[in-house]
View 1 (cartoon, rainbow, N blue to C red):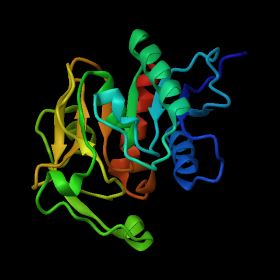
View 2 (cartoon, helix red, strand yellow):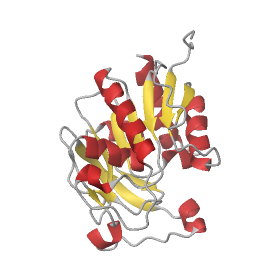
View 3 (cartoon, one colour):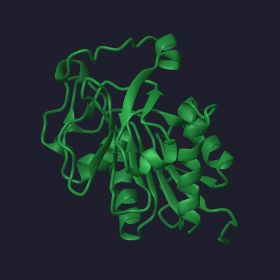
View 4 (cartoon, rainbow, N blue to C red):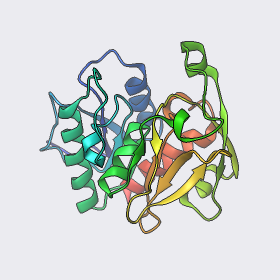
Length: 228
């Protein structure tokens, strides 16, 4: 396949096409100057040479991956887990820029030996957020961005308002990763590998907030790093 002049940015998602957030990820990549490549269990595209990787949000990771028991009657997506683990390993071997979103940030952390809180409301005080459809679209909470982090250079702000669509959160941070943003109550909102040019996991969904420049900057920095 002839390589596109624009960097190819793979983004992982579930098999179903009816998913607004995956559409927004693809749009965000295009707006940032990249060419999105959809990667999902039925079409993993392992022969495609991508230049950067976005691991999207979705269902909870299978808890035995971080040594906890699965929730009863919860439908996990083991095929997607396997797909994303494979692509993350490939991206790390090739030193590609990586952005993990929500579930994606949690996967990055787990693959580095970290763990997750399966219920953020039980793990932290003042962490019960509204979860109805209106709130998932419009509710915002504040996080503190750590000085000198890659994320702080991208956002150019120490205090940032983000959306809230998650029920789980990072617990123990994985090897080689650092927390680069958290809420006042202690909930981790972003992690990164400070030894890499661009290797970031965010608990929020920046693709749903690209009407603000700082969140477009996140995708633009990913694509810029992919070009180099």
